[in-house]
Amino acid sequence: MATSTEPGTQPPHPRTATGTGTGVRHPSRAAIATRHLRTDRWWLAPAATAAGLLAFIVYSTWRAFANADYYAAPYVSPFYSPCLAENCAPMRSGPNWEILGSWWGLSPALIILVFPLGFRLTCYYYRKAYYRGFWASPPACAVAEPHTSYTGETRFPLILQNMHRYFFYAALPVAGILTYDTVLAFRDEHYAWGHLGLGSLIFLVNTTLIWAYTLSCHSCRHIVGGRLRHFSRHPVRYRLWGWAGKLNGRHMQLAWASLISVAVTDFYVYLVASGAFDDPRFF
Image (cartoon, rainbow, N blue to C red; front, side, top):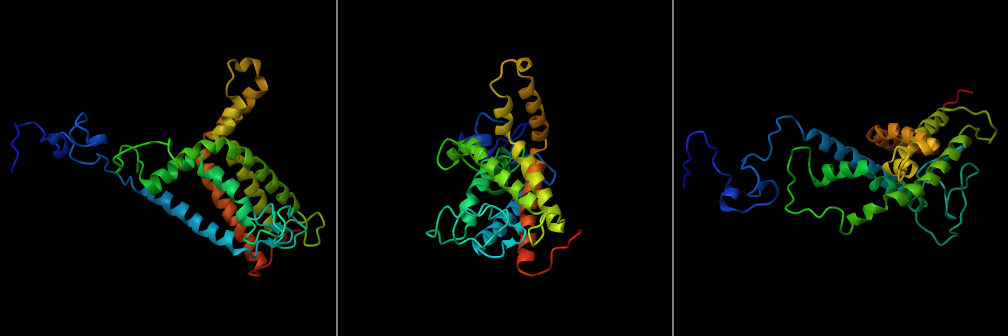
């Protein structure tokens, strides 16, 4: 049955006409028939984000369970450092503590990856990225999400996002260990100092990006300068807060750059360890 309207008026939205609907379809909201008024390709950003994150998930899962080709003197993959199980490949480069003994039979990467993975999963930027990319919550600015209800991060498992600060504490020593690996990457295969290969530079870039991403974290910025009533009484913390704030302004870019760099570094070690090619040496 057709609905007649007066000239110059908009026909009521089907849901608002019946008094039902949630979110943007609630009777108290404007009765706009279209889902949104955006005419640009708004879906490109969440689609590209989902594709990028999915590619890293597939690659890192393969490498984490591979349990092979993660050490090529003097390089050790960042996915496997520090190596805490007895089944680690024999290393003279990088932390190889074997503190878990022989009972751990799976890939040693599964022990250490939980800390940087937890740090990134609970990161404020990555939450936005995968909420939009995978869950369409919301898919983009000014685009209504398809979900009928919203509980926020108050229920399991999303309530675990509140552990971000603690994962930040765990990420700091991991970044420190990767820095140690980078220093050792400037030794040759005989563990003599003075080596500079392509892998040395890749490790240096990766460690720099890892530190930049870690220190640009919102939790780091709050820890450095939060809960201060007078910055003038804490000039050192104020200076550190300012530096953290500048890095925080590039948090998204650093999140992607460090994610790509850690995958590239691991893949480079894989190529050298598997014999695909020799590490080019500059001197």
